[in-house]
Amino acid sequence: MFGMKYSQLLRENRRLGESLAAAASPRYRVALLSNTTMAQATELVEYALREGGVNASVEIGGFDSIVQESARLADVDLVVIAWELASMIDGFHYRAAAMDEAELEGVLAKFRQEVSVAFAQLAATPLVVVNTVSALPFSQASLRDDVLDRFCARANALLRELAPRHCVLLDIDKVYAGLSIERSIDRRLFRTSRSLYTLDFLAAWADRLRPCAMSATGRAKKALVFDCDNTLWKGVLGEDGFDGIEMSPDTPDGRIFAEVQALALGLQRSGVLLALNTKNNPDDIDEVLSRHPAMQLRPDTLAGRRVNWTDKVANLRSLAEAWNIGLDSIVFVDDSSLEVDLVRRMLPEVTVVQVPDRLDEYPALMARTATLFFQLSASREDARKTAMYREEAERKALQETATDLDAYVRSLGLALSVHENPAELVPRIAQMSQKTNQFNLTTRRYTEADIARMLADGMHRVLAIGVADRFGDYGISGLCIVRDDRDRATSTIDTFLLSCRVLGRRVEQAFIGWLAETLRRDGIARIEASYVRTPKNAQVADFFDRVGFPTVSRSDDCHAYAVNLPAPRLPAPDLLPVTTPGNPGAASKAAPMAGASA
Image (tube, rainbow, N blue to C red; front, side, top):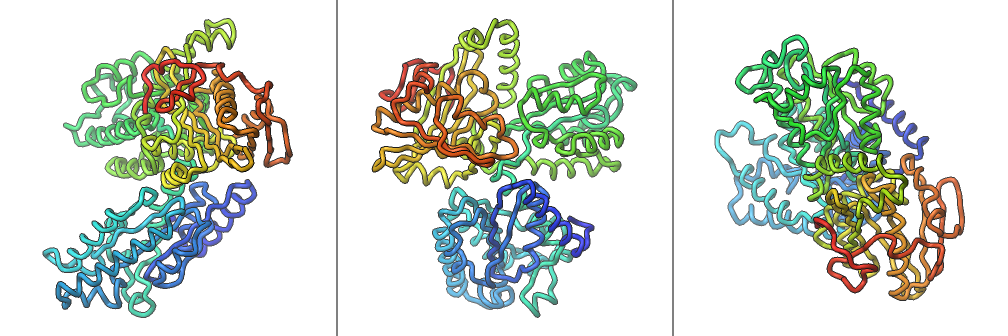
C-alpha cells in the first residue's frame, strides 16, 4: 500500500472488489466508528482487507457518535472503534493540563460509560477491534510522563478491563512507532476539520486490521516453509561446510539468522507448521539439524522436509498434499530471485517472501510476515501441531501395509469423544470454525463470543469432537453445531466440520450415526442439514447424500437435506466407540479415549 498514489489505490481497490465478487467470495461487512474524522480510512481498510482475500465492504459512522452508531450494527461482521484522546471532550489535548483531579475523573467516567454502553450494544457482533488511546501526538516532547500520558494509561487499563472476549485491542502506539509522529499526524487538517491522521498513518493502521479479518474469515496462513542456504543461515552448506555457515548470535551476521530462527520457533510453538524446501544433500542437512550447536530448528520442530534436487514448486505441492492444506495457506521464504520468481509465477496462491539484500532488514521483514499467521483464538492443540503431523506419518506407514480401508481403521484403534457445550473448549471451537475450509459443510465463521452465546441460549448443541488412536491423540478435531426446535421436534445442523487430519477414517460417518441416535433418544423426529458451496469445500458436496440424507432441494450453491428418524440408511451409531465426557449417559458405546485432550 505504501508507495502507491491514492488515486492508484482507489483503482486497485475497485479491481480487487470486482475480482472477489466474481469469485463469489462472501461479503464481509465492516463498520468504522470514531470520535475524530477518518473519512479516507474507508477505501484504505477495504483495500487492506481485500488484498488479504477478504471481500470487505466498509462503511463509516458519523463524527463522534460511537455510542449511537453501535446500536444499529446488528448485521455487521467487524466493528472497528477509534477513540481519539484529543476528542474525549473538545480540546482535551490542551485543556487537560489545566484540569484538576475531579475534572479529569469526570472525563474518565464519561469514557467508561461510553465504552461500557458501546460494548454492550456490540455484544452480538462477531468481532470488535478497538484502538488503544495514545497521548504521543501531543506529549512526545515531554521529558516526563505528563497528565495526558497518565490519563491514557488509566483509559487503556479501563479498555482492558471492559473488553469482551470477542474484542481485540490494537496498540496504536506501535503504528506511530513504525512511521514517526511527523508522518502520522496532520496538525493543520486537525485544526480545520478534526482530521488528525495522515494517509500514511491510516494505511499502516489498516494493515494492522488485516490479520484480524483474515483470521476471522479462515484466511490466516498455516505453514512457514524455508529454504536453507542464506535463508536459515549465512553461507552455502555444500561449499562452506558444516563449520562455515553462520547462524550463531556470537557473530554480527549470524545474529540476524539466529533472530529469524527464534521467530520461526515461536510461531511453531503457537501451531504454525514449519518445513524445509531446499536443494541440498539430505545427509548434510540432517547433520546440521541434529548437531550444529547454533541451529534452533531441530528435527522435532519440523512438520516436513523436502531436501532434494527437485524443483521447489513440486516440493511445495508435495508438502501441501502431505498436510492436506491449500497452497494459499503456505508462506515460502527463499533468498534466490530465480526461485522466488518461479514460485510466484507457478504457484500464485503461495505467499512468497524474499530475503532482503540488506540482511539487517531480514528480522523485521519476518516479524511483519508473522502477522499472516495471527489467530484470534489459541488452543492446546496448537502446541502439539507438529507432533500430530509426525504421528500422522506413522499412520500413513501403517496404511501402506493394510489390505483395505476397514482393516486399516480397525488397526488404528480409533475412538471418539464428544464434548457437549464445553465452555473450556470455546477458543478451540472458534478457531476450528475460522480455519477449517475443506471438510466444512457450511463454512460459517464464528468468534469466541458467538460460541459463548450459543452455549448460553438453550437452543444450540455445540459438540466438540475429539479423536484418538493407538498412535496418539489428534485433539479436538471436529465441530458440529446443532440448533434444536423442540416445538417441531426438529434439529438443524448449522455447522459440521472436521480437521483434515482425521478424514478418510470413518470418523465423519461414525459421528453422524452417533448424532442421529442421540437426537432420536432426545425426542427429535427430524434432522435438517445443508451443504453450502465455497471455493474450497467441493470434496463434501455429496457428503449428506453418501450418509443417507434425502435431498429436499438442490442448486449450484446450496443443497438442502432432511431425514426423519429413525433412519435405517444412516451409519450405525456404534461404527466407532464414542464417549461423552461429562454426559456418560449419552454415550453410544463406552470406550476410554487414549490421551484425550480438553
